[in-house]
Length: 114
Length: 115
Image (tube, rainbow over all chains, first blue to last red; front, side, top):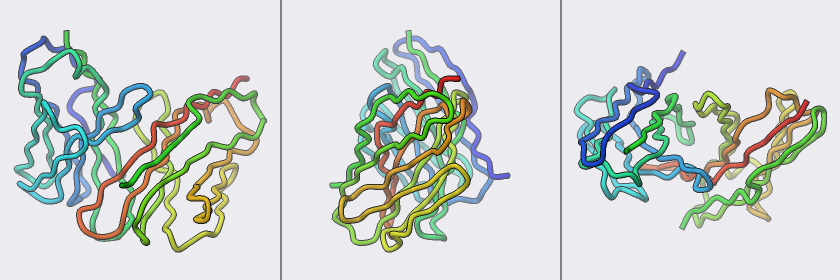
């Protein structure tokens, strides 16, 4: 069974903290993504990576950074958490081998910044 | 620019009713892919179907069917004889062929099926 695993289901952090959200996939996928999901706004792309150490900004990268040191792991970093970053964060991966392949998603991390 | 619009924010139906979820997309690409995902209360998005831009055939899978019409840039999803287990948020998404493609999602439609 294909698997995308996010390190935490729920996180509560304080304003100003540095926050790491971890995502691991076991499918040897080239592409990995971080999305943010908010009510009424759907899924918005924060960053994506198409190879190790390669990354591209999505639609809402401000306040976030990412790291991909190994193919299977893609980390989202909130440099200084703020209350407006309270949200559901979804990690996904996909293969480039077959065009139009679907993305596989993790279970999500619900982050609350207080 | 690429865009996916799901105008229906929330739909409520009674069990066994048929329901159609609308999806309208915008893209200038000639080759692209469309997807539907289901997000149950557990939170994980589950892939339902993929359709490429050259294949306008409708597809049926059990109680689910999809109607793709390039002329109206729509990719609608119908659930026949809905069940309570169909209650979820459904997302339509678009991606394009080639390069470092990414997925553009609509805002989702919350479907509530009442017993």
